[in-house]
Amino acid sequence: MIRNGIKPNNSIFNTCINACSIDGHWKEAMAKFDEMSTYGLTPDLITFNSLMFALNNGDQQEQIPLLLETMTIKHGITPNTITFNIIINGCLKRAQWSEIDRYFDQMLQQQVRPDLSILNAYITSCTMQAKSSQLYELFVVSRDGDMFQKIDKYHFHSAISYFVESGETDRALHLFSLLERKSGKPPGIIVLSSIMRHLCSIDEHDKALEMFYSQLERGVDPDVMSFNIAISACRHLVTQSAGLTGHKLFQSMQTEYQLIPDEVTYNALIHVLEEDEMHEEAMKVLRHATSLVANSPQVDESLFPTQTASLKLMKGDQVGFIDLHDSNASVARTLLRCVIQDIRSMNEKTLLKTPPSLTIITGQGHHSESSAILPQEIRNLFTKELRIPISEVSNNPGRFIVNVIDIRIH
Image 1 (cartoon, helix red, strand yellow):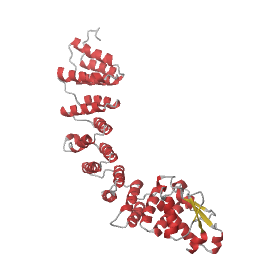
Image 2 (cartoon, rainbow, N blue to C red; image 1 turned 45 degrees about the horizontal axis):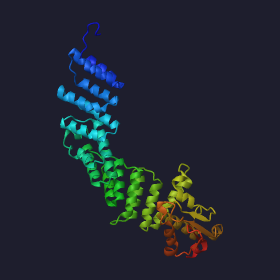
Image 3 (cartoon, rainbow, N blue to C red; image 1 turned 135 degrees about the horizontal axis):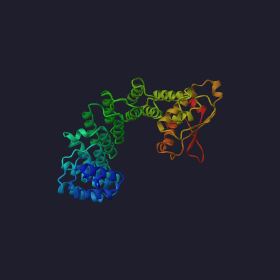
Image 4 (tube, rainbow, N blue to C red; image 1 turned 45 degrees about the vertical axis):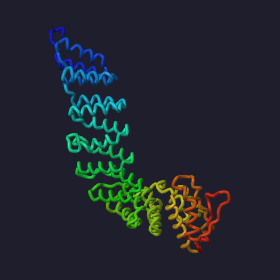
């Protein structure tokens, strides 16, 4: 082209520099940039953006500050969103968190509006550096400005999740309400469940339930996990019946929302009912869960390990032990109440087919965190609450024996 007497222009040089930048050929890109002056050409914004891209792809980030200075001071060109997008995402790729902060601040000072990609990088930088105040200000300080309009629900979700995980409940709740006002609709069940779970972990169970009910009224679509959290939270209610509230939630998830309870649901509800001394209801729920396993080929027995492993006696099998290793105390007590109820209701003919004694296996409290109190809890059920004598197994504190005849007469 040059040999034919055709003088190159900015567009041609920009195309060449951009081609070099795509493959990371930063030296060739810089050479073309230097060559422009020999033709009396002045680089423009596209030229510098292409050079930034070339330096990033060529791992030459240390040259970017000087190039940025040349761009702004020598040539008087103001960087735009694309410029900062290239620079900041290059820093993100290399986990240069402090550099992201610096360029983000510079961008705002020059009144350049960030795009979604830049906001993602900045939020990531804040979370990686645990700069919670800085992250919080991004949402709160900018809520009346143009940048707030750029922040989408995914940015909110990331920030809320960060505040939940770092235990900053008030900030998480504030952003939750901001998101709801910004979008005009419920933020969604995933972020709601995350906040509810955290509230429960800091003993704010009433607040978790209040949030759940409030979001249901606003039209959020709940899932099984959110109902499981809500039912578990009922255990700690003091102003109303925990058992009745939990049972209403259990019915609501099925009738109003057509959700199918899972193992966690049943265990949570049994726990609530047992602790609220609604023993009959707890037994009904456990029997219902067991009947699902027994009668439906579509239900995986592994979903209800405690029930299927321990209720063989209730189904008429001649098994002389009940293994409660994987159970929590509430479910184990309910299970044994079912067994005791069935033994007491047996006729003589059925009783003859039943083992004369049952070996109850609780473990020694080391099997899992939930079973630490299990051995004593189960012994207390027999000896203190039901007044049924037990016999310890010598050299094995993880087991004890109960005679069926003692269950019948006590």
